[in-house]
Length: 116
View 1: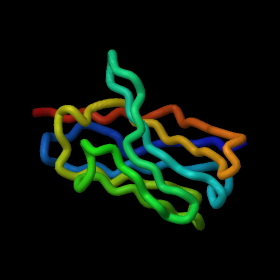
View 2: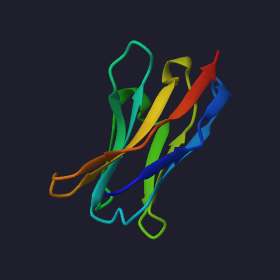
View 3: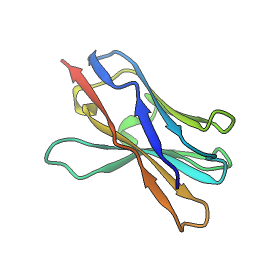
View 4: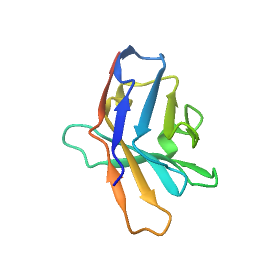
């Protein structure tokens, strides 16, 4: 079992930046790591993911503004968020999916609030 703990959320003005971190309790080497977000009344959506090989994917609305990265030595995945917009406000969740697809873990989330 892998436990995920997110941090780095907070209140920021539109145009500002935040860096989210997701620390895992064990090795993430064989996991695809993702950041999802959910705003009130909305379904949870995948924002960005990074495979064990380093391939990244982003939802169109954050391309060019957000960057996902990982450190397998620190068992941590990051989401650098720049040029934040009010519509980016949500609770952000970290997700780990093992490469064989058999296991999936979620963190408790960290809140991001963007003021206009």
